Image (cartoon, rainbow, N blue to C red; front, side, top):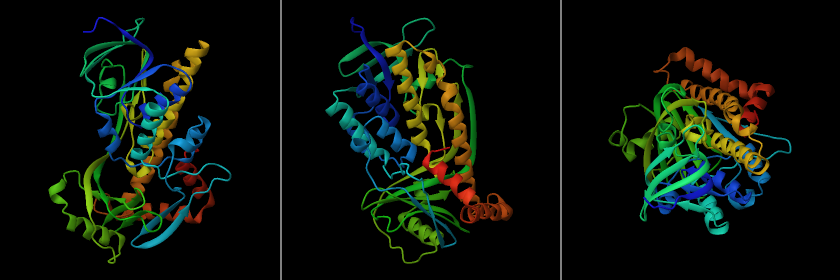
Length: 392
């Protein structure tokens, strides 16, 4: 162990969207912080993740003076909801407000890394191993970790766990402190990155054969999402089967096979851990909550968490006002539960409206009626649009 104990104000574990965004906000505000990340920078830059930055997130980056530097991609304004090949366009409108953007996590992460490290001179320590959190009551928090230069001890005022569902941050909290709330949907998504652009609008489609979605991932690529069984693996989904199912579920035999770059499987589940803080450790993003990808809210809930945390740290460290930090969980959890409800609505609607073998034809017809309501009721359309924009 190095004899010298390093110090910082805020230690952040994890260099994903939430950790990098928080560090960028703090660095911009003159608050010392260090990110500890177990992967190397190249891996973080290349990691493919989906993402839509909702209108509320766009406004957040504008408020912090970073939107022009960090956000790219086309507007996420129109969704093509299809039932058995019949297309209906749902346009999200916000009078005078910011629109959502198809800014993938990879794009946002690369922009954050460049702004934080290369422009602002912020500190991200990569290839960290053997990380241990010391977070005792009435004691200064510390983190012990190793890297290529040996073992280190970092003393800090606060620790923020942005290291995901399987990270060390939440695992460091003693048993009995947190309550876990969870729901398993009973199926998964096959996500396939393909060498073909979205030629029109983002697609969320159901048919009697199941759900399929197509979202843009840059000018020449898109990602397809297909409902599949939890037990499925790569060997069950050849490229030929993938394209056959896409054509079948979109009711479109004109779609051609193109290069498939990768395939991953995502079990659909919802999870919330409460409270999201323990002593001087705060959880943000996937370390505290998960939503199924049908809602496109995972990254956006993370951004909301770190926005609240950044403002709370400013009050605590600059004004000696600790009330916002103490109320962090109470502030963010109501929004998390609202968007868990939205995620449940989106996931059940888009899957029940398709293949009836899981929940039956009664639920199939009810789900299709829900979709119809978006186009027949201005009130329903406005609420759905507000959820898509993050305005609820």
